Image (cartoon, rainbow, N blue to C red; front, side, top):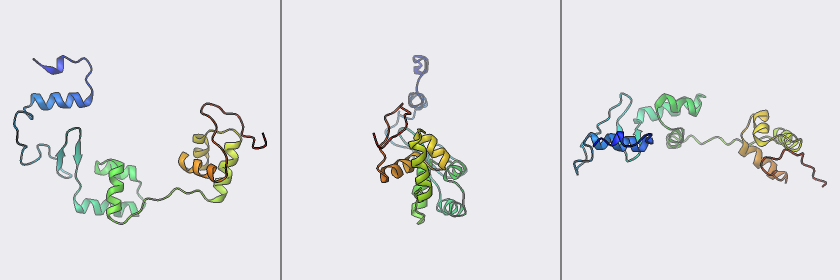
Length: 159
């Protein structure tokens, strides 16, 4: 029986399971001594749900140097074939702290004014050049309550 034809639209994890089962990966109780998947960038480890790319020490140092030179995390993640959160793990190993997106007083005041005028958090963040979490923190610091979702009424503190 071919399991791949029994399911009309299998999810990725199910397709992986079917592929591994039909290729004989689960027939032996022992794991292979080396990873079966190889990559020119680094060795690859088989896991139960995903395939992870392991960076060498040199690659990890290189990505930290590129980040210090001004490269963006998402661009480096694509270049090295790893998740952006993994990038932060490597950067932390090299003593590079995550930058805090803290608004200065002028931007925070402007954000509060725009939010009070009826803009959504996302619109304010785009206008100020920040993210919604930083805008929320700035609003909380000024005791401006969040509006309920979906409402765009102006905030009036005197009511």
